[in-house]
Image (cartoon, rainbow, N blue to C red; front, side):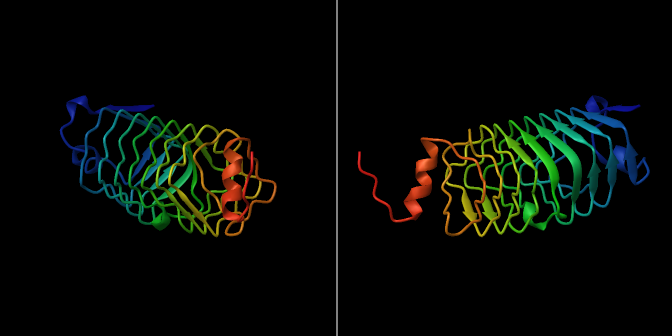
Length: 207
């Protein structure tokens, strides 16, 4: 296994420029790399731990079976970036426009802050967004078939023209979803949060 301890490296350039375009089974830790590019690189079975990639441009890069643990990727640029079998845990990922990334987005998010992001026009079917903070996130024309949203807070997020067939919202909260503007076939909801679905149907509830 290739372990790269970035405590002793000042710039990501020292790694990127000194290595081939592809990285296999590498472990990056404690890396701080802001407002720069890691573009058109490929990472296979790599781990990123306690790294900061604030506003980094990942254009055209591919992450296959990788793990990001306790990383900051806020405002990262994902144009044509591809994620396959990638897991994000305890990451800060505010303001990312996933709509420009490669689809399908085969990623899972656990205990992450995904606020102010956009997943518009992306295939996120069978994805997992578990126990996440997802405030003011856009899900427009998103394929969320069989997605699992257990424990996630969707305050002020927008779902429009999205496919939520068999999606699991049973322990999610603060969501506002119009049954008229989305496909909800066999989607799972639970009370009292599910009452919010009626707000879009012109129904008056009387105690």
